[in-house]
Length: 223
Ligand code: GRF
Image (cartoon, rainbow, N blue to C red; front, side):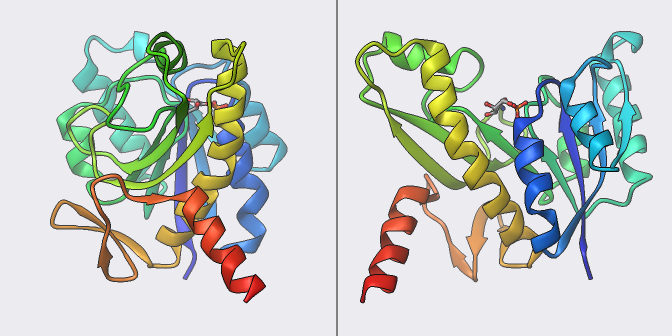
């Protein structure tokens, strides 16, 4: 049975595009894309791929909880097995997170636990970090704090600006998010007792590293 996915966006949707591009090769289907902004470019990507869209403008709701309840209702109508946050720029209430517990993933542009929240690229540059990256994690009530599944690192180079660094990080995001979504869709990845588990193995506090996995895979091929 195919895994029904709903993707939540607020902007460009380049991660959504990376997921769309992989769909025909996976056991999953993006059944809808929901945005809190009507002008999110990702909605055009969804239309081009023939995916249903919904717009729920958070400004039309009196508070966070009523917006989240409307989102729960809109999402439930698609009976999702997995809800994927891909640049969805709203903090989610405990009620929302609990409703989708174990089937809610997020991608964050830093090597968590470093730089939760916004402006991660500028903060990494300011701190003089030599490495930066991205993290895919299950979502819990703690902002950017849920169990980590996969991280990918990129070097910080001389002369980097937040824009240059963000572009390097996004290249990794577009490789790692489809991979993690595939793991979930094929039943290999799940959240068990507050920990991410892949193929029955509990993952460590910072999950797996994409760079290490690729070295391992190269090693297997070369052998
Ligand atoms: C990504 O950098 C992601 O890490 C963050 O928001 C950005 C979304 O980019 N959560 P896009 O809309 O997928 O291009």
